[in-house]
Every structure is written in structure tokens, then in C-alpha cells.
Image 1 (cartoon, rainbow, N blue to C red):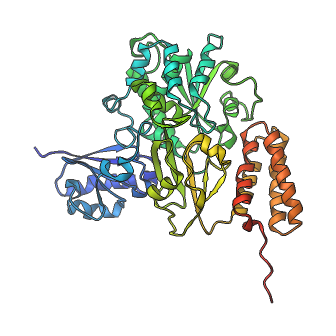
Image 2: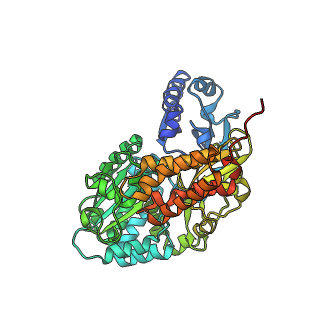
Image 3: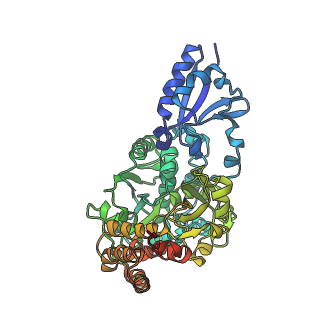
Length: 518
């Protein structure tokens, strides 16, 4: 009986968009023609998106990767020995030995790209449920102590300590509490949540279950952005599988603990990434910001105490419980502990997801791993933290990825999205885009955000048009002050960040070009 060759191909939506599904069809067809029996395992992405579709062949040396593999290349590759991992210009060697993989510290991404995301057997075999099982050996208070000791901070952008938030929910009175996962990943250049949900959905369910046990919640909701249909499909299947496995529902793992998770699809509004707007939408209302106090930890979903965390925060929890809070806290720097999944996007030669302990420099991420710009032109600016993050010039990229270091530089780390621009970018145009984005995505509840962003676009147009430049620059600065101090939430309060950073670092772009001589 001939040996069956195991082949791994990503089912991630980014890989599918460049032909991964067609590659799988071609692999089965080509293998059949030469009399080889194969089985293809559909995994998440390894994160090296410039190599997708990436085909990995299981060999005695490990999984050997070929990429990017086009569907039309399959026949020739198989004929030339691809299924035996033979040398070829598309053969990159053992994937785990590549610098991109070897130099990461993968906790959130530990199984992504390695296992079948919908196989409970694979999940347990690669460390799944270890965190939940240990959590059930502890009291809820001890679980919160572990999370607090780990130094885990919210990965959604604000960086608030997760342990303090959980303790607040646990201390709140009432028989009904919720765990809400904010998966409305809408920032430009961010896709780590999607990669995790499509590549390792059980880790999110496990993290939510640990959170529920810690705070005393009986129901959980995942609020997923509508633009992620593949993630929705994977999560729906994963939730059903988890229920059948006894990982969700009544008497989880025979402990008597009851908790279930429901998936809800968002309405497509950026503002619903803000936690109180998300809660309004979950309740079936229009997504609009709620004033604080009360905070969601005390009065959240349907007015009940609610632990609201984003995907990466919750996915970090199983590893913290499995290995202990001290082990997690040993990674990172100062008050930024553990790992972050950085996303390289924009004009970047090697885009993808790279998980590392906090403290790695922005320069290393952009140049060492991202390999500079895709266009080959010099980097001019980098925006970190989504469309409301500051623009950093190329000579400021030695900044360490640390919440406090970014704050001191009037920037924000946010969700870890890094968008790169080359020297052809018009920074006045980018500043205008920030105001225009705010005007379009504002929930409209507060005047500084709703009206201020519209006026901001008009003022920038007057500046670049050469109309009373000094006066309008002063007006723009006053407007930014008003939006920061008067907006109800970060939508209006952070919009001045990209505007002011563009003015500070690239003032020449706001000066209208002199008229050409005739």
C-alpha cells in the first residue's frame, strides 16, 4: 500500500482570494494523474501573506513550503517532485525554520496555520483546553489573579488592564452577567482578529469560557463585523462542534459550569468597534455611543455587568492560564507585557501577521520583516493604530512597540496594525482623509465629532488651496482641541491625531504649489 502524502493549504480568506481553493483542486487532480495518494488539510494562514497560496508538504524533515503557488503551476510542480519536497525555486525549505516563523513568539497564533481549525482532536493535541482545565482547578478569584499578574492589557486599542476589568465585573451584583467579544475589527491595516478566528476559533471560545468562569457569566456574545463572512462560517461551525464536545453549554467538561456563546453579525458601522456602540447594536438598536459612567463592567449588555474584550485579548487568556501569569509577564517590556500580533499592511513588500513580545522596534517590523516598501521607493510615513493613529516619519521608526513609549511620542499602538506609505504619499490628503472618515463614520451623537469633522475637511481644503493659510491653520488647531476635549468617545477624540502628526512632520505638503510661469 502506497504512502499517503499529507499536504497543508490555508483556508484563510486572504489565501482563498489569491487562488488557494483552486490550488487544492489542482493538487488532487495532478496527484491522481501520477498515481499518488494525498490528503489535504485546510489550515489557517502562517501569516506570510506574500507567499500565499502556500503549499506545505509533510516530509521527514518537517513541513516544506512552496509559494506562492498559482493554480496553473500545479501540474508542473507535481511532475517535478513537489510532493516529495524536492528543490525548486518556489521551495522555501522547512517552514518552521524560516526567519519569519523562527523569530516569532507565537501564543495567540500558536496553532494558526498548523492545525485544521475545525478539528477538536487537532486542537487538544496541540495544547487546546489546557488553560480551561487549569482554570477549573482554581477558584474564579484565583483565575482573575493569574490574569492580573500576567499584565494582560486590552488589545483592542485602549490597553486597559484585563484583570481589573474582570474584577469589576466579578464584584458587580446581579445573577446575570455577560462576556462580550468585540470582533468588529474595522481599523485600516488590521486583520489579526480575522486570521485568528478563521485559523483557530476554538481558542477564542476557550478564552471566553475562562472569562465567564472568572466573572460569573452564563452567556457570551461574539459581535463580528459583517465584512467577515468566512470567519462567520468558521465560528458558527466551531460553536456547534464545541457544544457537541461538551466545551460549551451545561456541565462544561463535567464541572457543572454552564456557559454558552452566540454569534451576532454587525451592521457595518465603524463606530460599533467602540464598546458601548457595540452593546447598543447587540441589543438591536442603532450603534451609538453611550455616555460613561456607567461603564459596561457595571452596566453593559441589557444593563447587566459585562466583560467586554476584543479577540486578541481573549485568545491570550488560555496561554496565560496554561503556563501561569508569571510566564506571560516575563515577555514584553515595562507595563506592556506578553505578545502582540502585529499586522503589516499598506505599501509593504512582505505583508502579514507577526507575533512578538512587546518592545520590538517599529523599524525592525517594517524593514527586517516587512522588507520595506512593495514599490521599492523609500518609506515616508507609517501609521500605527488604525485610521485615527498618528503618522510617524521614516526617521522616527526606532520607536519600541510599547504603549507608554508610543504615548510619549503622541502616537498610539492600538490594535497593532501598521500601514506603510512610500515617498509618493500626499500627507495633506491623508490628513483630509482622517477628517472625512470621521465625518462619514461618526454616530452623530455629539456635536464636536459630528460637525467638527465636516468643518475639518473644509478648513484643510482652504489651507491647501492657499486661502488665509495662517488663519486657517490656527482655526484647524482650535478645532482639533475642541474635538479632543468635547467628543464623547475616541472617534472624535482621536481624529486630530493623524491631522496634527501630518502637520508636524510633513508641513510642506500643506503649502500650495506656486503657479507655473507662463
